[in-house]
Every structure is written in structure tokens, then in C-alpha cells.
Image (cartoon, rainbow, N blue to C red):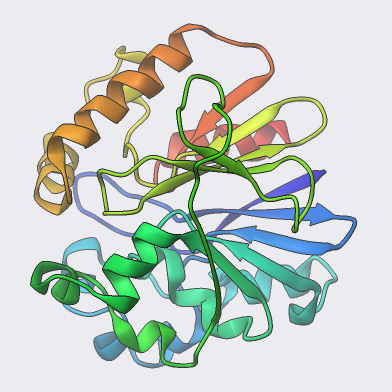
Length: 261
């Protein structure tokens, strides 16, 4: 499967600039997005749809960075996007959903519970319900299939295409997940917000203090976040030649993947 690496939301944090790394996957059954970044409606009404967090992360909110505009630039139509697989429901990951109203939106059942169906008080503050007011076609999954690369809970999304796997990795949010994509030459593991900075994986570069602090404050379960760091770092140290690990916000990893694609 051919994979395009899209930045769907530059964020101008003063100490650690970030991107919104979205995957666009070409499959036999149509296009698949992994996350959707910020969307056109976020640009039109950031106060209601992005919320107070916009003052911290300072998103650029440019139309040409939205997934829909980049899909069109590649020569596709927005209706070619048949499925969107989400790592989680934070605003910078789901803002583009409303630009693809016909797509099925795949998410873990735990994440849908915490964001849409029965959020806690803290989750109601965290999530921006305006971003799903258009009524997306949610498809909820319990990632309870076979093990995948040492992860205990993973489900291959065969209804979308062979080689797309939803891997449960809660911690950042209640139902956070990673998404693995078989590109044909290697697996690409999009880890969402399971970690923020490449230094978490390789240990050679210190993670900026501002990112460490933000990660701790935002975490739904900080112990699980730290456990996830250890698991992903170990996977990275094994240096399996058929696996590349990326995340949602690290510009270094994004540029590395875009150069290799």
C-alpha cells in the first residue's frame, strides 16, 4: 500500500514546534486516513472547535495544511476517502473529520466511550464535541485480537484492507491506540500521542522539559504513558528492519518519513 505523509497542522509551541502527522494510505478499496489533523471548520471557528488549548499549542490553521486540501492536491476527491482510523479524539486529531462526512471513522470502543458516550468531567473539558456535531459514522472496535509485535491487544481491520492493524495503547487517553500499516516493504507504526519526541525512543536526545510537562498534565493515566514509553523504546532498540515507528507531532520523525517515501 502506498502511504503519503501529510502535515495537517503546524503548531508553534515556543519551545518545541510540532506537526500533526497524518497518514494517507492508498488501498484497493479507496483512501484511508490515519488521524485527520485540523480541518476547514477549525480554521473558520477555532474558539468553538479547538478550544482554549489553541492558546498553548498555537496552531497555524492554514487551509492548505488540511487533509482535504492535500488529498485534492494529490489528484483525489474527498469522497475517495472511505475510512479514517483514529488514534484518539483530541482536537488536533479529529478536526478534519467533518471534511469527509461520508467516511467511516474507526476508533476503539474505550475512546468512543470516554469522548462521546459517557465522558468523565475531565474528559468533557478535554474534548471538543463541536468537532463531531456533524454526526460521523463511528465504527467502534475492541482491539482484542491476536498479539502484534509484543502488544497484547490488536485487531486487524480487514473490512478496510489487509495490513491495517489497530493496536490498543491506552494512557494518553482512555482508549488511545496506535495504527500499524503494512506498506509492502515494511510496517509503519503510527503511535499517535503515545510519545511526543524522538528522544523518548532513542534516548540520545533529551526530551524538552515543556513537552515532558505537557505529556504529564494531559495524560489520562500517567503510569500507562510511561509504560508505553518503555515498550516503544524497547521495540525501537530491537531495530527490526521491517518496522518504522512514528508519532503524531515530532517534526524530525515526520521529515524523516517524508524523505524516505
